[in-house]
Image (tube, rainbow, N blue to C red; front, side, top):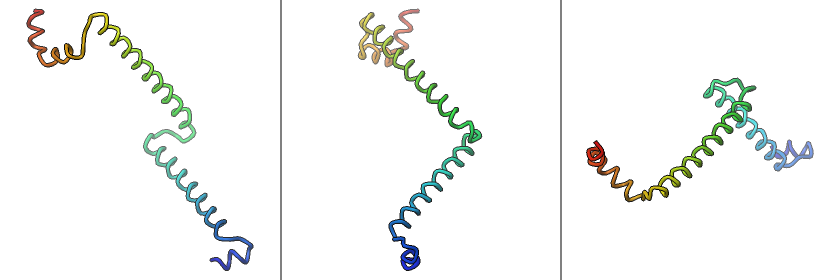
Length: 100
């Protein structure tokens, strides 16, 4: 192999780089094909689908943050502590009987 490369004025680093690039290309093709089969979405639609999913995920994270703030505010407004919530979870039936 080295003799053939030398004949064309190339060295092993050129061959190694070429192999790495080809391997990366094969990996990308395999991953894309696998993704297409797993999602059953045509390759042309994958970028838009991914962008939509990212936006949906961003909205869910934002909503979760808002919910946490509201929970904290509610807990502070009514002086509810983690201990009180834990006691409620442990003795829920007792609390429900009291309110009935």
